[in-house]
Structures are given as C-alpha cells and as structure tokens.
Length: 265
Image (cartoon, rainbow, N blue to C red; front, side):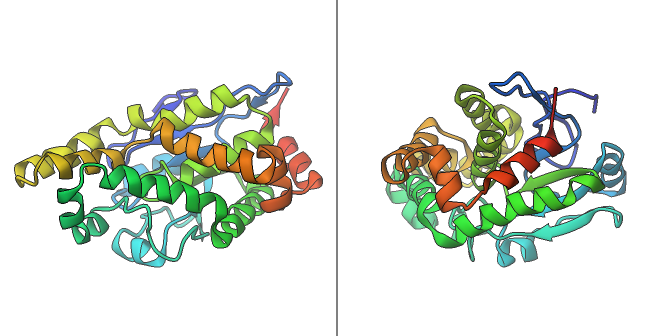
C-alpha cells in the first residue's frame, strides 16, 4: 500500500480511498493520511489492522445501523478509537446481503426495484432529520479528533452514506463540484471485485436477470443517485452552501476549523 495512491488496497477490505491530494478552488490541497473513506472493516486480520495504524489512522467513524454492526463488526487495532454515528436506525440502503435476501422476491419481479430503492434512499439522505443530524455530528467529530491522527469514515459498502458524507465534506473544504462527483463515482472502480462477487453469487443461484439488475443497482454508485440528492438540495434548500449552513448547521467557525485542520497550502 504505497503513499499517495487514491485507491488503497487491503486484502480483506474494499473501496478504501485516500481523500488527500484533492485541490480546492483556492489552490489548497487536502493533506494526505488525514481523511480516508471506505467500506466496513469486518474481515481485517491483525496484519491489516497494523497496516491501517501504520498508515496513520487513529479514529474510525462508522455510519452503520446497530443491526449492521452486529452482523459485521469492525476488527480494529486496540489503539484506534471507534466511534459510531448511525445515519439511519436501520440499513435502508440494503447494501448488505442479509437485507437483500429479505427482499429477494421483490427484486426478482421488477428489474427497476434496486434503482428505485436507491433513488428513494438518496431522497431520504437529504430530507431525513436523523441523517442531517448524523452528518452534522460527523463534521463536529472531524474537528475534535484531527490532532490524534488520520480518520476513516465508512458504512457497509462505502458508497452511499459514506459517499454523501464525502460530498458534504469536500464541499465544505472548497473542492470543485466536478472533482467531488469524480470521487463519488470512483466507488465503482474501487469495488469491482465485490460487485462481481455479488453478481456471480446471484447468477449461480439462478436468481434471474431482474434480480441481478437490482443487485448491480444496489452495489454501484450512479450519477442518477448523485443528481437526485443535489437536485433536491438545489431546489428545496437554495444550493449546497445554504444546505450545509442552514440544514446541517455547519457554522462558519466550524468550516474554518475543518479547513485549518485538513488543508495545506
């Protein structure tokens, strides 16, 4: 795992991405080894736990629900602090296999079921008060833990809850929108192995084309999902900066602190 790579490789994890190196509109740069986004860390063995510590990670922020954490608890070095900030009380993203199996019949009947589900989820991300509060606490936590070292923030697959958290954070730091979108969609390249495994499992089980279509839509980042969230923010809340200020309650001092902590000239 070399320094200054965008996609970080772990044998027992996926969708690990360094946010360091992104440039802002003011020609500042996000510092390396400070902000990493990922999927869950449930399969990490001792060597990878140590590698994460050696990379500089000192805090893990988990956006998952209690039921998700119970099924797939993160495996961490004891020196890394674990914090949970659930975006929802349950996994409405249906990003884990347990939830997908519960709705197998629905996904088998409608090829658009997974896509429709995700469009609904992104709508909820923006308007749900618990989600809004969670993203506010996420920013507060980033202000509080920076001095201790790098931070990983994650959900189950590292693409939806984590994806929106990254959208908000990069917006606060002043990263241009095109770069923010490119970071969002990079999930698909960083999750190829996992996506293929899920599709292969569905095909082996003979679950049908409709089901496989939904699995793909549930397992990937999609411009339509991203646009759904941003269109709602623009139409209902006056744009991203107003949403961050008025809805997520990210104050000017908090913005300045985040920039001070995570940007470098």
